Length: 245
Image 1 (cartoon, rainbow, N blue to C red):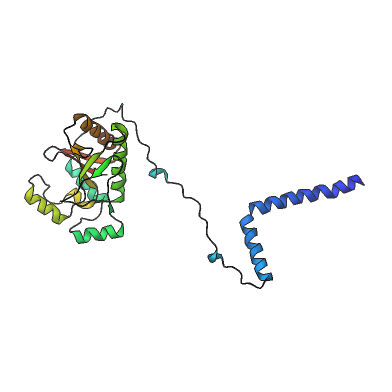
Image 2: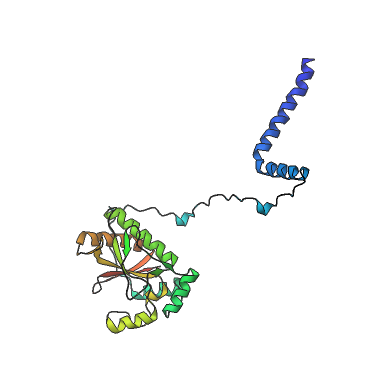
């Protein structure tokens, strides 16, 4: 008799356990099915799927969006001068169209092709008079990475100054009449990928700080070696002209 009882009890508990696991695994589906069944029994309308709150899983960042700040304390590479033709070629290939005037610039801003650049970690953007504080999303990302890397090397409270951003052709022509050193013809600044970083302005003050200048050069040299930017040190303008590749 006991063997017969066990013969029926053991399969029963086995099936019960499997059923419980299935209910736990498919709880959302079972809950939805039960709610629909109760609604029908009570004479209420069946809730529509689109009316139910949708819970989306958190999106994991893409590997290319994860930036690990490098330790450059022992980095020895020197900053080299990249030909301006490389700057212009990279801008024409990877930047926006040639931006003729402010009307077209702000159209690109509305479309999200250009994004505003404000002060961030490791950098500030001064009040611009001959350009606009807008870059492509990729150029802004690289600028932010440069800022983070500089701050890690120089100190948490330290920052450099961006003195120029995207410049329209109209602005470039006007600048050329005032500044003989301004590029004649098309400028890489007119494609949203170029910006200038002062090497005499640190922490919001004009300063010929040799140590900070060398720290900034080390950071730019690292990004240059990584194939992320082209750089020209413009001595008359006291800035580094940077173009994102």
